[in-house]
Image (cartoon, rainbow, N blue to C red; front, top):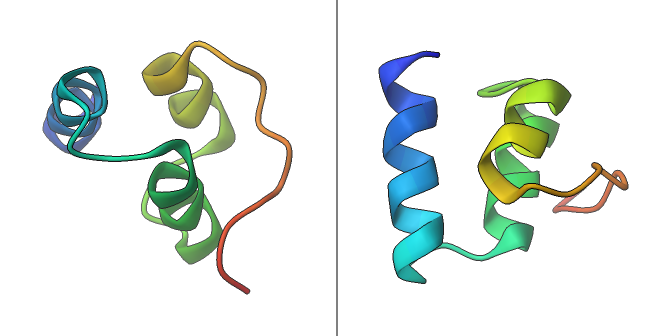
Length: 50
């Protein structure tokens, strides 16, 4: 995994990032749907800022 993804996962587990914030990264193209699912442990539902 990319260093960014591992960093996001750590921040998500610590509670400093929300699922919505991770979802915004998918919308912006910073991470993939698979990476979102790796970080959160849940299926991507297409949310986030549009």
